Length: 498
Image (cartoon, rainbow, N blue to C red; front, side, top):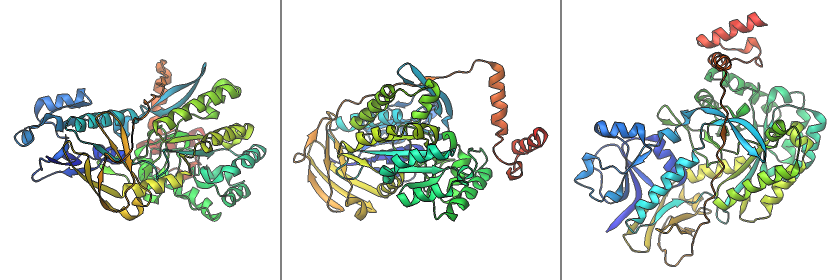
């Protein structure tokens, strides 16, 4: 029987469809009308009756045959009932968590859980469903041809100190094309020459806001971002990327980024250690890409350890680099130029030596990664295969011309082996017996972060009040926007406390 290898998503579910797309899984959405019965796999996103509602609240995935398809699709292997919201939704919140550097626990507020685990679960389910039918699971490759991963280094320029920044710059400029520098405008107003030097050296320059704070209010974020862009624009710098101060992400920030026209952001309280995606806000797909990174850097370690121990630092990041490379995952690290990289610029030498040692690692800026991902996102695949046969028919639609110059399609078989083809045209027929199949290395899982719990009820209450007020003192009082009750209360309190 000839099967359409695209996943059939029955019922609108933007979170599910976004994450299938980010993984490169070909899909087609059915929201009304007749549903063909020739797809390899069906995802049913609208649970029926009490049992369906109960399952949605209690489990992440279950094989389930909806009543409306029961008479038309009788192969249980082809029906998957998946509820990804618990793991993939952007509204899961952030927590203070600890990451172990040897015997040192470095703490950072990050997303409650990386979405990578949910994606891997979803991918395993798909592989099993395709394998039971003697079909290959197809997906778009994550990287341009010839590369198995990407390495990039993000630098958040929060504070400025001339001597430390000079030491950072002298080392970093050797790697400028692969370093994305996010400038906090209020601090670097007094360091315009340094900003221009970075621009002229070829750094990938972007915004870190004007005031070093992420607001809950969309209007306040818009004001802050526009003020930063005005400063950077005076220097001939026109950022298309943003990184939230302290990695703090919320819907108000994402909407502000959309309004101003940013192309990407990188906020580890949204997600970390994962592939990019477009957040789903109130049922719609955002136009601003999120690029996850590893959320702790040299500075977080040094703040916890109160010293620099090269052996510990290199063991942590070297092991992490190798694990991500072996798993075929993006390798994105970050830090700050003042103090940490200014005191130990050799840390950058260590990272880039590891990156340049393997020609399969694409060493690139975050802008290059975002451009590649947007190009990949515009391509859709239609693939057909006879059950049990090795020949597949492939057609790429969308921006196929640009993608097919450098893109790949990866197939996975019932044994977990993978084969890669490099399409030379928008349409083609390929015999997968004639390509090289390789067993991927066993995926090494990341250590589970340690959740840091606050037990003092007074501290918990104080944090709740500050969160409601969106309390901070960095913003000049005259720049605060009183658009709702919390913001008006905040302005009043700021006037009272001075």
